[in-house]
Length: 172
Image 1: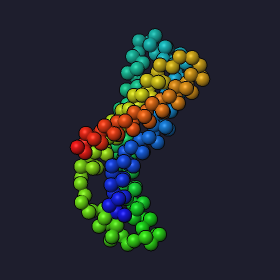
Image 2: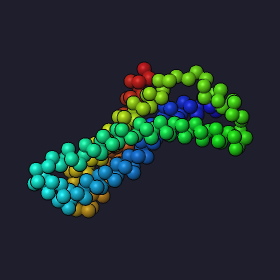
Image 3: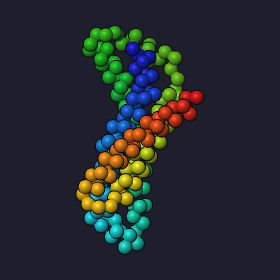
């Protein structure tokens, strides 16, 4: 149980699944915010004032996602392992010593780093794709909703594809 929990948390759940969830929530918010700014001509006003609107609006979102999501992935790994301990303890499935042995059995530290590296790529995908769809909205509020939905779908597909490629590259 400990071995399987560790492998699942390190390789897929903490990075891929959590970033898919964040793509739905954060990606939608980014696309909606920028889309609303485009539709209400706030971005045009920034450009008229001489501000580089893409640099001013998009770069902070990308840098925030790239710096925060690896921390969330690390927290997710610890929370998953603590959850496994709590489940074994309260449900009486097995004792903590056996679970700890399974967690330590054939431990490969690279799996933690692979999850963090993958999360960096996923964070960039979420922020940049969502910002692109929001920044390039044409139309009204319906177009903003469509851009938000398209950003989530495209980000999710790209995360799954990037997960496949990165896992193959990082794991050999």
